[in-house]
Image (tube, rainbow, N blue to C red; front, side, top):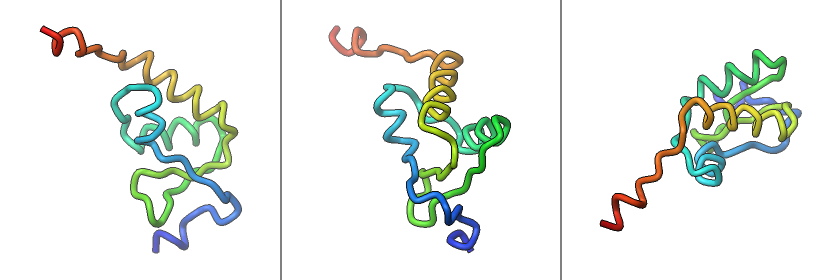
Length: 85
């Protein structure tokens, strides 16, 4: 089950949509974030109640660095200028 595969020694989780809202970017695939964290040497799992949550033993700055790299590769499009017309 999802709960049995969850990292039990990691008490907190990150909601990917909330992080993307803060950065004003589109949400990357969860598999991409998990792969980046695992390639950096950290453990990851899903959170059993939140499908868009990720649990990891990575420090905060590592996750934010990964998200900054995502934004750099997928620039934020400012559509507000088009809406004002």
